[in-house]
Structures are given as structure tokens and as C-alpha cells.
Amino acid sequence: MKDEVHQGKIKQYDSAKGFGFIGTAEGDIFFHISDFPAAEGEPKRNERVQFIAVENGDKFKAVKIARVEDKSAKAKKTKIATHNKSITTSLLSNFRK
Image (tube, rainbow, N blue to C red; front, side, top):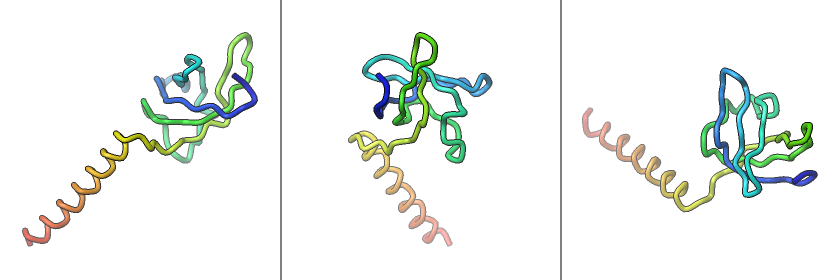
């Protein structure tokens, strides 16, 4: 599970402790917030990420974590619904003036 880019989803994250776990096909892998892109905010549950796994004692740790755009059908449907809602809200606000 090392020296290559892996993908997974944030399974859990404890902001008070600064670490969490990424769920992958091979199992859960530990990550520390210092290996997460800080400029993009804290990780969110079910957020898709890619990372490199490095040995951390007898287990592995995710490093060089990057967010990945969710291209699943469910994500596309949610994105479209959100966009349509914003358009509808904008149009309705014009009628209320």
C-alpha cells in the first residue's frame, strides 16, 4: 500500500485531536491534519481524497493528501439541484421587488 497514489473517503476526523481515518478498499488508514491541505479547510466526512501511504511503525499513515472532486452520479445530482435552487431563489427575489 505504499509508494503510489491511493484514493479513499474521509471516514472520521476529530478536530480536537487533529487526526482521523480515511476509508479505502484495503482498509482504514490514519492521517494527521498537518498532512491535509490547510488552505482548503478541515476534512469533512465522506469527502474524497487521494494520498500517498508511508510506513508509520507497523502500520501506514496517509501523507500528501489532496481533495478529489466527487464525480459520482449522486454528487452530480446534488450539484445540479443546488444550482437549480440558487437560480430559482434568484428569479423569485426579482418578482418580490
